[in-house]
Image (cartoon, rainbow, N blue to C red):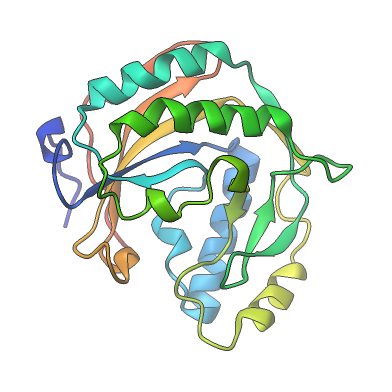
Length: 231
């Protein structure tokens, strides 16, 4: 237990580490997402989504032997090329094979694809792809490039079997969840570790923030990363 300061050697080239690049929503959206994570954990015992920080995935879990410096160097030009862009929160939809509840942020108000968001995702994915190990367990099955669908997860992974429809209806009573629009301008590189990535990885997962970027601005390295403490 406890928050332990560490060196980057703890995350670089380690078999139990996966990295990710995430959109950090603004405060109002982060608060709303975190509140739902807390409610579904208390009411339905689903803890998986709440293991994470409030976020939207831009590049999902990936295994890499690259150093953090190499990842930052690959992403710096992407962050410089893109300016902050607008996001629409189109409310709850069932997502993926499990049909778990997420907030759809892939589309604009008229239902068309948010091309600024899609272009940013594709740029990030292309920049990081050479750094991903060939045996990465998540990247080959990730919804990426033309299959990308940006979202803010409300519950996932450990929803009680048979209760997904009930949970969807339960959360729809809370709509609207968060602001109906916000600006995407802050992105985080994160390292995650788990004792078992092939199974219920969220049960032992911890994460630590490594680097932060402001779109069109400068980045900031976390000076003394620490693992968060699972609930």
